[in-house]
Length: 430
Image (cartoon, rainbow, N blue to C red; front, side, top):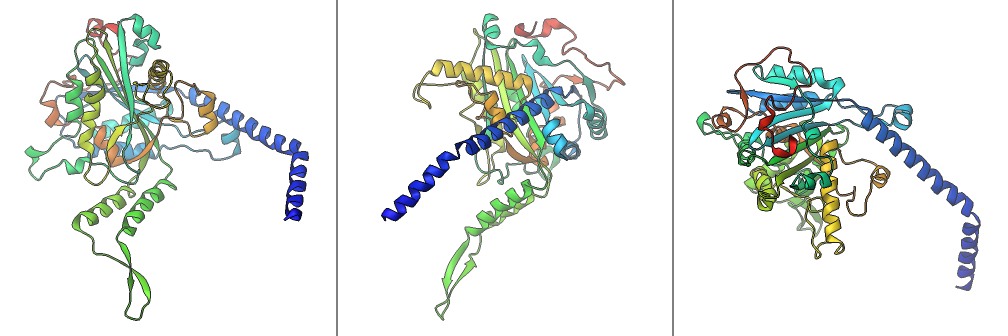
């Protein structure tokens, strides 16, 4: 035993004598990580963006399948690092798109934001599927909203926001638009109707902004994650059986119709292109009408309709929502944590920030009271994403929820304002 400790002690002294080697390795890793994070940061903010507002005609006789076709095309626009220069010098990262539903005092608008180089392709595909819509390049409506919470408070406003995540693993699907359809056309339901109904209930000076960030997922990686989920559920029906000869072997027990359908839907999820997705929303209101109950439960409740029995559902990410109490983790400085979360979600929405892939990138923008490690993306395939974001059908447009156009204009000018009459703007945006 003494010989063992002697050898261990000698090895420890040798390792200490090589401190310069370990320091060089650690410093080298930190330098490369910082360099890569900086190059990715520059790449991210060097990309010019285009914002389209999609104006709805009086009637759309298209199901969410039309938006699914558009999203499938968008997945083909995925970019990725192809060589060392693109990774270490250009800092290239996979670009993302945003799909936004915004209510200005009950008047609902649809927006799409994308890298400018893809704008013509996306616009052409929108017109291919929805021939009567208007697609106008507009200014960013967030430029009309205060940039900081302090400016917001000075204007007499407050905010509440959160990000949504899946309640279970990514491989489990949510309820999609195909499950809202009925054999009789007049009995069909439009799944976006629930969200629009909530957004239409705002008072004049209230605003709700709903943002869906979607980054085309790596087609070489994500299907395996879904199939792994299917395999884990398939293993649940496996059991060990002893033969008459005393040998043990495994068999699959008969599945119930529900279990069979569950595996079928899980496997079906992997057969369509997918996105890494982040969903966030923010509610702005004057202090006099600020309704925290509506903020917390209004939009979140509308997302409950996508819950599939024994499958998946949406829930709030408690590390991002703008509430903090002394009895919540980390049990200190609740007011400062609350303010930090408000500032973070306002910044993330304004900048349309996606959760960084690299930990060093997150560390560079870390703040003790508003961690950058809390945003979480999840996988949705094009059918699931089209269920959440699509142009409402005639079922919804029979009600006065969405600002509509009677006909499509040709060649609209770029940079159009959100409102032609600024008297219609909520107070904070004037």
